[in-house]
Amino acid sequence: QQQVKQSPQSLIVQKGGISIINCAYENTAFDYFPWYQQFPGKGPALLIAIRPDVSEKKEGRFTISFNKSAKQFSLHIMDSQPGDSATYFCAASIWGKLIFGQGTELSVKP
Amino acid sequence: NAGVTQTPKFQVLKTGQSMTLQCAQDMNHEYMSWYRQDPGMGLRLIHYSVGAGITDQGEVPNGYNVSRSTTEDFPLRLLSAAPSQTSVYFCASSYSGTTNTEAFFGQGTRLTVV
Image (cartoon, rainbow over all chains, first blue to last red; front, side, top):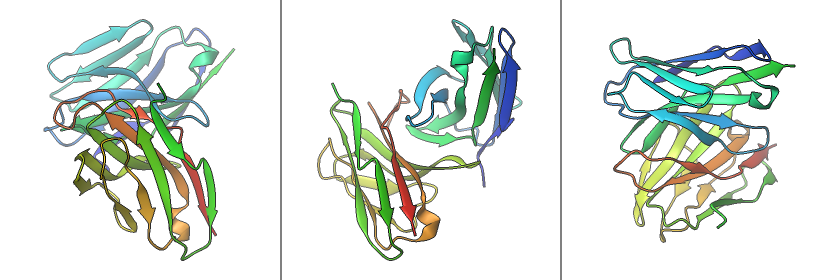
C-alpha cells in the first residue's frame, strides 16, 4: 500500500514553462513534507520542504503548495530550465521516517 | 567532510550468495536508514536506526538484516540474495530521529543478482 502517491510519472516542459508535480498522502500523522531532486547516478538531495501548518513555501523558482484538508501537496517550478531536468520525489515524514512517492522524471526542453 | 559514503558502488551477486553493503557517515547523525530504488516504485524504506544499538523495520525488510554498533556505521546485509533484490540501494542519515530534518543520501550501490 503506497502511503504517498505522486503524479505524473513523467513530465516534459519547454524552457521557461511551469512544471507542476502533485502528491497525495493518507496518514494524517505525517508532519513534514520534503521534496528531493535526483540527478542520474546520484543520490537524492533535499530541494525544499514544508510543515503542515503552512500553506505555501517559496524558495527561488521552487514553490510548495500544501492543502491539509485535501491531504495533497504540490511542487511548482517556475521558469523551468534544462538544468532542472531530473527525477523529483515527494515524501512525507513522521518521527524522521521518510515515506517517498513514486517519483517524476522531468525533462525540460530547450 | 565526506557526508554519507557507500561501498561498493556496483556489485554483481549470484542467487544465494550473501554480502554486506557498507554505509558510513561523518556528521554525527543519530538517524540512519536504508532505501531501495526501483523504477516506478520510488524509494522504499528497508530498515532504519534512531541511534547506536537501536534498529527497526521499514516497508520492505524481508531478506535484509541490519545492525548499528556505532553512530557512524550502518551496514545492510543480504542473507541469501535473490533476483528480486536487484535494485539501487541508498543509505541516508539525518540529525535526529525524533524531529524531522534534512536527510543526506549516499551515492548509491547498484546491485544485480543473477
